Length: 267
Ligand SMILES: [Zn+2]
Image (cartoon, rainbow, N blue to C red):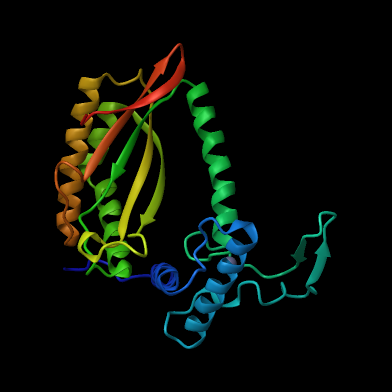
């Protein structure tokens, strides 16, 4: 596998957090499924402590998560505040604000970003934009190193938008804006090893067009163009994907002006 970019400290810490979460889930009962809010929070802080220790021992590159939730904001004193419902919170506690790496900052940041995405989508639709949903994936196995996979995948994402083909595509289909979301899933802890496929690092992109909604035929045309560009970008960084699964475009369908479902053009 050839690499076109080195992995960043965030990629490394993110990979570590994912691997630790996976390992802990296999050996214990700390996994945050069905354990309630407190159990999930305790699990998140436990995971953060492991992450901080790994950075401190230089098993991982330096990352702001090293000081997350264990130091005061400079020139302040950390205070504990008890709320009426008996819960408590901290004031002036230093947070790393890393959405992809930190198990305690990440959920709060992602919840806020979800609100911002909903607001942006509503505003753009009100202004007359239409949109399509693009999903980009790559082939993966249990032998993949998440750190390397993330780095190469991001390089392919940059490559697809850097070329002249993307500019031509944007002009042809009146592409004006996009919102990209990275998603990573893994095999369930107790899965049959023969059925495990490793880290599934992929992205979902909402692409806004300044034109009427695409027809199914137009959707298939833009999907074919995007698929060619994506497979070429993957090949350039040493990754690959099948034409059937590497790139998928969904078009939202509306009934009486309300989005009723999204149409998968491959079905
Ligand atoms: Zn943090």
